[in-house]
Amino acid sequence: MSIETLSWVGGVSDGFLRLIDQTLLPIELRTIDCRNTESVWEAIKQLRVRGAPAIGIAAAYGMIIGIQNVTVNSLEKRFYDVAQYLASSRPTAVNLFWAIDRMKRCYESVKIKLHNGGAEEHTMILNELFLEARKIHEEDRAICRAIGNYGQSIIMNGDTFITHCNAGGLATADYGTALAVFFTAAELGKKIMVYADETRPLLQGARLTAWELMQKGINVTLICDSMAAMIMRQGKVNGVIVGADRIAANGDTANKIGTYGLAVSAFVHNIPFYVAAPISTFDLALADGVDIPIEERNADEICCGFGVRTAPEGVNVYNPAFDVTPAKFISAIITERGIINPVNKENIENLAAD
Ligand code: MRU
Image (cartoon, rainbow, N blue to C red; front, side, top):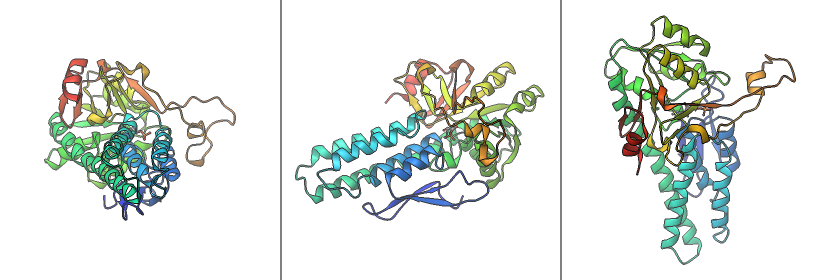
């Protein structure tokens, strides 16, 4: 991809966040510039930037933008207000809160070192926070590569896999999580085929995953979500790999709506089901998936997707954006630190705890 999913443009005190507007893909590859916190919030909310790691990175940069033009006296209040505001954009992907917490910890550690309270202090805080946001961004690139390297070992030459939603370069700093596994396997010369679920209702699979895989020359076939069980029964699938938005301490995993059904189908057909995710996606404070907050989105996404009405005006709609797959249906979790197999509390704690 010649354009980066996210990038910082300009200096620390006057720069801004540039994002690929993913709502326009695959028709148009265009960027938008976020120069205030509201536009970062809106971009996350409207899925212009989406995918768990990418929204964490966007929020980290958003916290810089939010304190660029404040006086040193109002900086602290503004910083925490911005953190709270950005945290309200989407509830499910824990990477958002993880990145905001990291920025808060950075702020607190800089504050301890500073006492003069002048303009100089503002610059130093901004610089340190910017370095932290950059670090979150750069680390994610390396994490994706490591996930790809570990994950490729589960793919044999000639395999066919299904993926759901988009866990590619568009959902991360670069390269992806689930898609990184395919990209790395292909780079190593393994011949693979990928079925991309279209991923109702917002079509991240059709619009983004199919596009990304085609860009990288990977053999991809688009299917409707409802076709996955049948092609599994027909013996056309060797495995499933998806990304994740939040993984509880026992391995229960929240990901895009439809993932749970896909995992159940894979289980019934004795097909391995893998989750690929960075350690920042684990929420060890949650014992299991029951308490993972599930975002509910606007009814129009189902009734009037992409501007075309496909259901009667006024019909009742339920639109959860994510579901939780119980750990018992997950064969292994691929992380940047290695592969968790079998998926259980002990193995997760050993690998994911700080
Ligand atoms: O609503 P979205 O498009 O942000 O949902 C994204 C997903 O469900 C991804 O699978 C997940 O965030 C992992 S991205 C590496």
